[in-house]
Image (tube, rainbow over all chains, first blue to last red; front, side, top):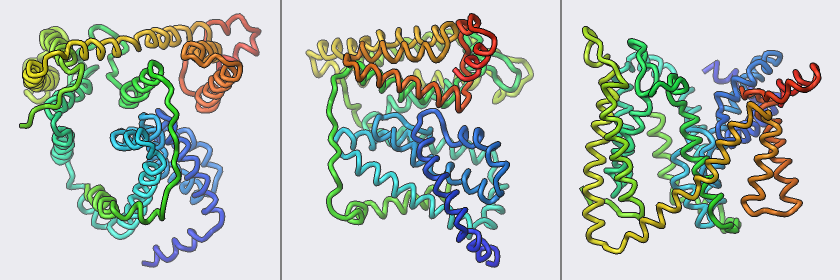
Length: 257
Length: 175
């Protein structure tokens, strides 16, 4: 409890607030650039933080990391291209809303969902760290396998009336991850004697190819369409009220995982 | 299991995927290895085979469903052909992208990007002077962000060898 109270002293410093602001805005911009995720941004900016006060440096990096996830939702919603790999699913609903002239609403929802999730994560981290420290070492490779299997099953069943093609593509995705040099005997798998396939497929490259390049082609061969951005009507709370339960449910479920 | 929703192009897609799966299944003995004395779960051949068998199984069931839907709704040939043509039309742009990637190690990232952006803008139908300058500015901005600032590893152009020593090094590092 003493630690929590002393952290409020740090939190009230003006330079910490400036660091949060700079980190958050920078994170949104970085997250919105497809291919440049928060991990890459942190790797690039890490040397720049060496000269800073440690608390300022870590605040800038945390600001970037936290807000980049929301930033990645912006291109996912507007141009059907996820900014970061975690925003791949945002394209499903987000881009559909853009096509229905509801881009602003989709971005507002993404913002409030990210905000709720982020705040809840921090609160959970503060109060549950000791519990997580006890449970985390028990989480072994078998548990990770089961979690991965659950993810695959969810992908299939969430594509209602398209379960068979979803199942096929799940196996295709798993197959792609086996291409390249394997780590047991260092033998080549499905490289077809191509040296560029030895290291396998990079997730970001695959995502950019699937979402960004395909969307670029669709836009290049299609006709221009003017998308209007109608302003929000009523209060934001009215807009968010119907899905508040959903946001809270998603937040608590994601914390459980 | 409910019937799959049929969309134009599904039949072609199903046939294409089945063909790819068959080719990959046949190439398992040539593209993977089996080591004696290694446990089954660590065999390099196991997991690709598992994935391809799963793909084949789901692909076959999917094709059967699609074929049944297809027979019910005759007259879908035109829809299939239209869908197929919309898949082939982007190939022109794939060619441009490949040409762009091929030209970067020769002409350099900056020159290739400026040329690619301006020519693609013209090809896309934006043929005003304003859009020409916008395309050049966008291309230049992207080079500055990704190569000059973020130092993304992109091959430097062979053309830079013809520049004076100081300029060549500067362009190789930043453009």
